[in-house]
Length: 251
Image (cartoon, rainbow, N blue to C red; front, side, top):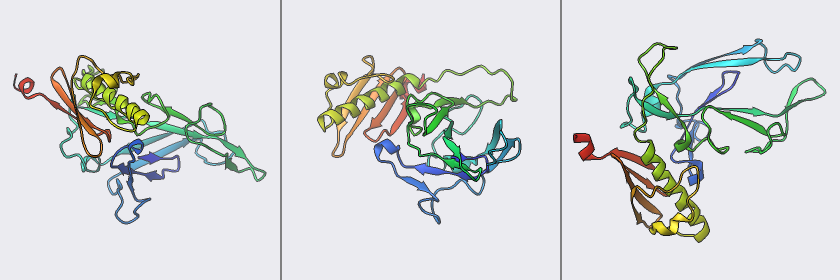
């Protein structure tokens, strides 16, 4: 979901991350049937001072408030936990600041820009995020922050809940990233954990304490990683599912 200070909004749905050849489902691609949060989406912005795109006016900041329709957020994932007291979701926010100049007509002109600017303030874009991603790429859900829902009123101190799935998710992503590096180097996948060890790197590393198995498939692989009370299944497309072990759930 994107919004600017003119309150122009845009939403999209990815079938998988761009890095795994994901494709966009949006009104930009399919104006008639593409994914959209409207109707149902409500948004409003406020700019200070209340004048936009005038180089003679120095704006200090702007604010945005958004109400997203839950049925739209969950329609492709009906098994996801509904928001409730203590429920945890993954989420992140990003702001992109483009580099501008002012032309002879006293109008803003966007400078030549590139994606993933290495030098903040250069003639490209600066990126700020709510939860550190580690690289200029927002479509990496394993790196998003943790959102905890609460029934308490805003500004009320709430006890943070431990994210029980976090260790096994990290272990699964450690295997995924090592396998991605291995495939890039060797042009194939492997079911040999010892061979993957040399490709393990931060921020997600292979967990030696996890019970791990890898099954090679015609188009990639599927791996199972067990740690604590949970088992994670992940494949070459970054598709990750975590389940609590039956014995743990019954105890």
